[in-house]
Amino acid sequence: MSAVWSLFATFLQIGLLSIGGGYAIIPLIQEQVVERAGWVSEKVFTDIITISQMTPGPLAVNTSTFVGLQIAGVPGAVAATVGCVLCGVALSLALYRFFNRHRESAYVFEVLGGLKAASLGLIVSAAATILLLAFFGTGAPTLEAAPDWAALAVFAASLFALRKWKVNPVLLMAVTGGLGVLVYLRPLL
Picture 1 (tube, one colour):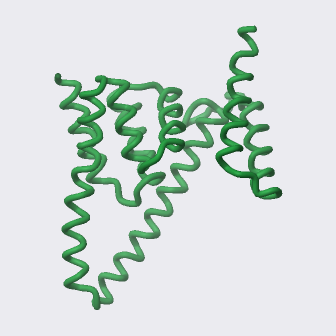
Picture 2 (cartoon, one colour):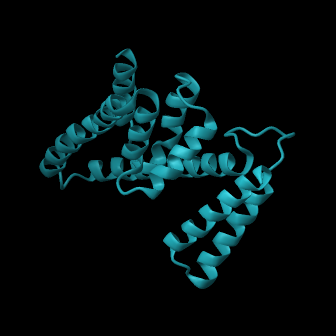
Picture 3 (cartoon, helix red, strand yellow):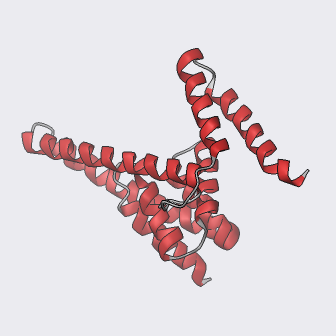
């Protein structure tokens, strides 16, 4: 039962600090779940992020649900999800009331401009983390780490197909997922 409470407390803290939403919160979730608690490996975390992106709903909520499920089953999934969402709901209601009262204030809009810039920085950090995990298998590659050339080739081809031919992203994900399975199974055959 302590794992359930730990999940709730960790994701309550993440939910409280998840300014910027989805991709901006990935580095914080990774720090808490992979580095501090050691609940999952970087590889499993990358898989969870991938699945969270493909399933409907907010990325942080999906990630918390999958991490909770991985650590403590259904009770862990519920605890992590509630912890992740609780602060966001409470803060949203409080901010709604605040902005309704101060909608004409120039200071409030300047603060929002600063928060937008910080959110962009967090999103760029999350993108860099995802790319490093996909290409090197770790969030902090060393000079000796060899890139995953198959992942780089699939990334380049996918990016080219999206930009050049405007391929349907769902179809592209299905095709690249199939390629990933073939690359993974090739040594086993």
